[in-house]
Length: 118
Image (tube, rainbow, N blue to C red; front, side, top):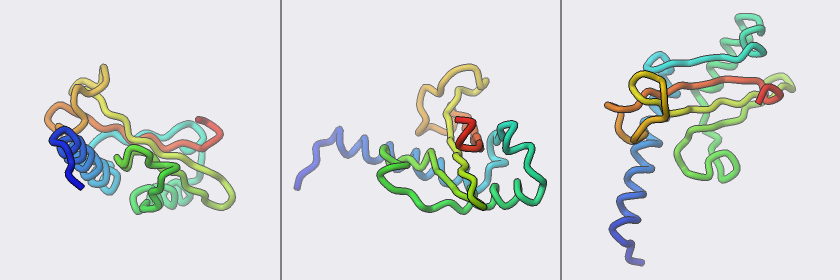
């Protein structure tokens, strides 16, 4: 099957965004990581367990990864559901990024929350 040039460009762009998201998720200190009140209220050891689960997350499927960018995940720990999400901002964190595939114009923010806080 022959792909059209725009499909090739789109696939390469998605692969770049996915790689940048995976690298950031594995090292959230490379950007901003925030936790909601519900996650912040957890005891330190439980927050650490949750953070390790986010950093090591690999259970991507069509339900949580429809655009194949690895920017969202759901995790269950001890019967509690949590979500994590990566958003793309401009250099000043004021607006959305003009190009999430370009790390020179994009700042990533990882938000970790209880599912019931969504």
